[in-house]
Image (cartoon, rainbow, N blue to C red):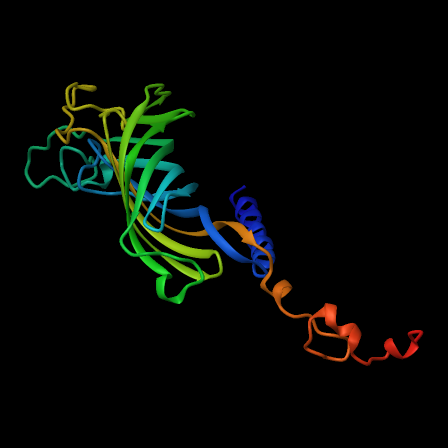
Length: 277
């Protein structure tokens, strides 16, 4: 499905680029883009170890001026963590004990597929104008508010007991995004981003700081957080105010005369020889 979406995106880009190259007096009014990257989480399970999974999505941005844009963003994110990745004896049952006493191991893990929707303001550090070699690159900073929602069941595991969960609670996120954008040619750009999201929930991993679970005390990490790194391509949406520049130039006659078309009838030519005098 992702391959089909990316193929259609590039088809639209090259079709619009071929049409736009013959126009003038254009203004950038917005931007659309797609991206793919990696995601991880920070929370109660396996603290200090980050496991990365694939993420992907797209966005639409409305430009206010050359420095400010309002962006609507969607990203599909897989978050996963497991205590077995930790070096802690308390968390990892496979770690050899260093003394004769071995504390009980927690051995928790979880996995969930989430859908991140956000609305952000984007601020460019430099003026950015596509097609202009002087203003074709800029870093930018974005911030705003979003939601993280799971529509499919997620897995929370304690030792040999798998528990399928459906967390219907709405998680509010506060994304901070740092990126850069480079104009390749025409309206086509490439970009890279790093997005960190603070949340209002401690149950993204289904394990909170304030409750015992199967006799094991969770960590005291506070609210869960997650972050992504991604690369992508984008296309600037343009509004056309004028006709093709070539239409305003002087038309050439059949034999290369550089006079305007309305005056060409006064010149001698092949067709004028057959005109009745």
